[in-house]
Image 1 (tube, helix red, strand yellow):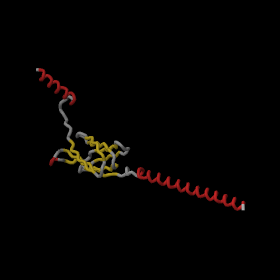
Image 2 (cartoon, helix red, strand yellow):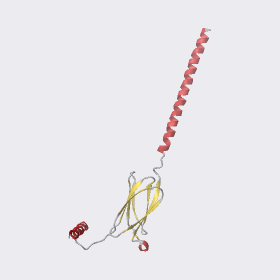
Image 3 (cartoon, one colour):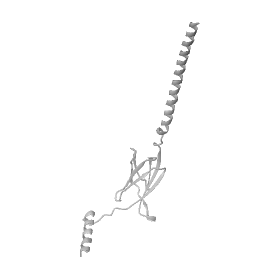
Image 4 (cartoon, rainbow, N blue to C red):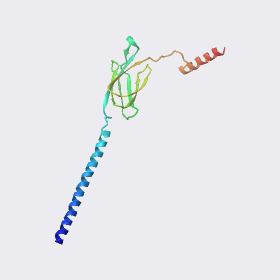
Length: 161
């Protein structure tokens, strides 16, 4: 009788140990699954999706607008490492693919015209139109900055009289 009771006690201890091991393994798997599920949405944030951003570049205003083909468009990410550039076609149009929900600084340049710097956030497919002005070529040998200083001096001279 003592042998049977001892065997039952040993079998009960082994059974409880196996059952405890099974419960512990299942609890660990559930915990690991919950941690993975909570991290998945953060890791799957759509930062690698791109929008088509259309740039149109013209000279002049209103009905006198002329497309500026050959304008250089450069987009540099402010909060991303992404950058890209291209040149407008003969209709003054250029399309760049930029990351959604990122901020970019765009420069628009063509010779003999004032350049443009523009910051914006990519929300969806967007279109921007820029009307560039021709740079004024002066026959005056005085540099523009010196010309501004001379204008201020003449204004001060008039005020003092």
